[in-house]
Image (cartoon, one colour):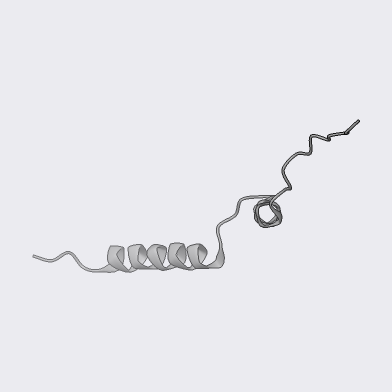
Length: 53
């Protein structure tokens, strides 16, 4: 008599690592914060310019 086991497919270790890196609070990265600060600075500088005739 032969015994057969139904094994599930092995898990992908790369998918598990990628999923664990993305866990937690979603915050903008340093590049996004730098761009946001640059846009805010440009808005402030543009608002200080005298109106053109």
